[in-house]
Length: 511
Image 1 (cartoon, rainbow, N blue to C red):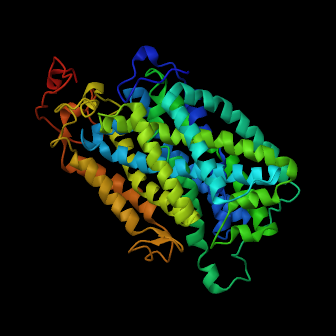
Image 2 (image 1 turned 90 degrees about the vertical axis):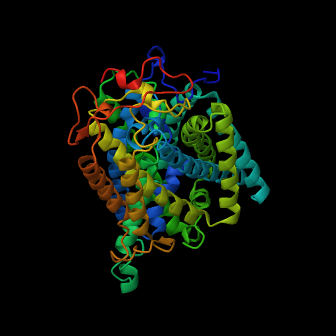
């Protein structure tokens, strides 16, 4: 555990794959069973919904997000590498950088959320317990120390991260359950929000945009793991039944209803007892939580912030450092992790002290899922049409600075998958509508309802399958059983050439 991990995105040898679907559950749930998820859970209240309306939006977001996410877990056991590398099969040897870029944005966003929320809770709790001054210097020190701890765990690698989550998952769950008793006396499920019968017409017209917007903020949490699941599932043996791997990923997100509902319930209490903390102009969920907490719960809040934030930060940062070590081969996994961590820390300070924090989080998270979800659709449909068959050596061509192989397509780009992804992502952004924050050029065509994500999902699926039919891929990229719902064409496969090239041309490998 205390040895620095040496593996990059190279295929994990079968002898070293000793993780289980339960370990995947621990990592995925532990990365979301945190204080930062509570912050996301408070957004339905910040958007003006009642408790029950917010609960419906939360359930919709979690379940839909879990269904979108869970198939992404299968690539790790099949290929023994991360999901960005696996995407080479569908976007091309060079096109896999799309996944690396999306994972970077996701890591920066959710690493920042974990450091912001945990740092604020630690400073606020220390202020209430010990009288620590809540000045900028206190926040700077808290953020820097917390980010440093997360970086240290990521540098050690997968085993240390798994150890942290084995502690974090039960500990955070217990602290959340203790919080249920702490706030039970103040909780009123009849909190009505702003969309009441007495609200004016202009306010009522914002209900559906606010409801969909809140659900999308919740959905961004499970979808954010899409680029990272392979980082952890690659240590699961390839012989593990796929349904167990998919089930572990799905249940890990359903379990996050614990922190989501905790955030929703406490936000409704804050809106009633300390409404200044949910002012849309300057919301402060952490400050509000501390304001309504009984004195004996300050220490558990601090522990929850520390333990949960470590889990979220490490799961977000580890995978991106891992992947960028292959995008920039001069950097080792450790060096790439430190570089991405430094960039994320810079973003944290700019976002905390120079921008509107809540607006930055919600806008950034929505943009991420709008661009990431079509990429996931291409990956999942590609897996289905390929019947789950891949060539592990051809997937590593980019990482080894080679050329050729089954996934070379057109100079390293599979324009079918690339086109389906970028067209769907652009359409999604054009139709995005986040009330009061970001409205795409076509965002008002659905009466203010954000239909960007559903459109991007449908466009990516229809366009990718249509392109596979109209412009067949080489027969060599499909397995022995052939293609499913796609046409193929017999074309020669360029041999792999360059450093560490195979002694046998890729075209002559068994198909």
